[in-house]
Image (cartoon, rainbow, N blue to C red; front, side, top):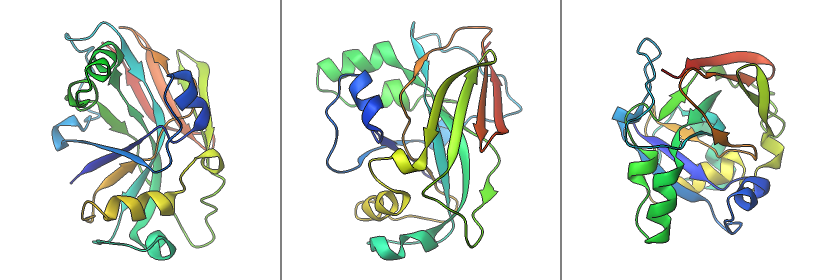
Length: 203
């Protein structure tokens, strides 16, 4: 299983972090150990003083593929949910200043959380998928797949030019504006089309 992530896929989010708007998908990866297990408490990492949430739509890969053409990409994923890409923002900022990779800030244990997948049945409108994120009951992020810079099909096709996709891989498709800090005691909840898909308490 691979956890593949797309950065800066919403214009407003790229701008809020002072990043350039990309002309092709920004790809990074998390190891399998980054997968958050719902039955295990989520503990605030000791190595950061600025843990951020980033709520995203997540795709489930259902077919093995390489060098996938964009027009065929939709047959390689069949499930969708919402997830949280946890980020040690202080560490990421320091790494970016030095031109170093992001893994320590993005790929640590339990940094990739996502809910149960919803099947993308025939007729599913992948260009109009709504999701939102609450912290302590307050909505802080809202997103729609139609606002993404790069569509699901473009993302899957682009990833496959560099990495073989395998059944069971997941793809985090980028976060909209509104990312922010979470603290010990915060209750985080992510919704897909108004349905709660993921709940996490930070301990």
